[in-house]
Image 1 (cartoon, rainbow, N blue to C red):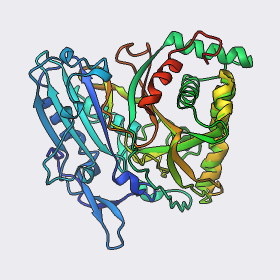
Image 2 (image 1 turned 180 degrees about the horizontal axis):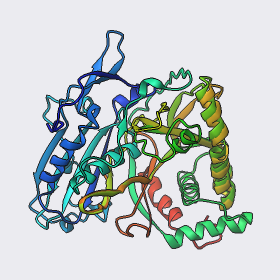
Image 3 (image 1 turned 90 degrees about the vertical axis):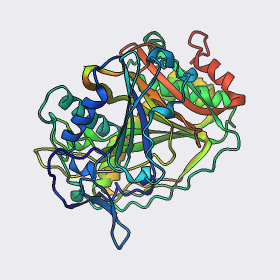
Image 4 (image 1 turned 135 degrees about the vertical axis):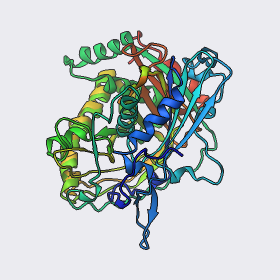
Length: 521
């Protein structure tokens, strides 16, 4: 156990009502950061962690439960689980750039404490594995009660700053989770799906900048507009390809769910400081819903616009939540529903412990119950760490996605995004009326990690070579966007999928890799 290097306050701190969302207590998020070289990295990172835990002293504490069953943080200074390991091979021996064919089990590089220790009782755990070539892997497991992706990446970067010689982290944290604005009353019915009788296949797909440009050009050709993001066109392509591959009934309603970072909304509402620094849970799940036929048979631009419209409604949902008028929906997963998570902006690629950025940042496993709504009040000085994400859902008839134009699919996504602001306003005000979310095979969930900041983690030897996902068998269709170890930072996007059954995988890959035919998008 690595403890804070100096005495820290011994008190009890509350979580926000939203931090206590039950699935988060059971959710440990796993990730691997791969670094090309370092000098005694385990020793240096361990020392830097001990220093970082002084301002981040709640992270060194432990869960406590009141007589009423409410969880909070007991700031005991107990410490953080830290494991030093070594491997008798080189990083090249792992073949980590080809995640689908890695030679070693990724779980070997994650921290696994003794059986007497319950991982879900820990806020964060580390394992640093050193290789013969001088490279190393930082295996990370963190609790979603304490951090979201952006938050944990910022904490990792703080450790890197100290490892590189800073006396303290550049950004100083604050804990104000007991000052949630508004009057949220969130009771979320989230019946988790049973394990599928037929497991979903996992596969990694790299999108070059050239292929991303083709998708954006297709949207422009169909709409005359160039206003579409990489996320919107990739998710539209993914959603459409998957529904075509699984041959979903064109009459059924299908759902797409993805997480939205609320930080800019909180900054606009003066809840968060304008100069950033918030590193807690700040995510919101947004849904897009449409008839399956609209996705598979409509134009590509229509699907993109569905996603964009969902995003445009987020602001209203946010303000509805602030006013305590938000009504949550039941989330029922099924094969028709797809969940997407974007890791490209988390910031893991910027973690530097003194030897440069990571070569790869790899997610280890997809967990059920990744849905949470959070907010907090901040003072002007210091920074808050908690949950700050929102899930957005896009819904459309299956035929519109499968048979419509590519631009129509993109526009579906854009429309969802455009509605995000209004939706968030209603959510914050508590006025948003939501529906049951059926998490099934017809729904696709997408998560974007490309902007979290894992690539910025630097312990003194540069940023990670990349991110590595460590997948378990998904219990519902989910996809993750990250930077690509093969294409390199800035060279494209890696899409890590776990969304189709074996009998649908070949057709899914054919659809995803088709960019040139008239019906490609």
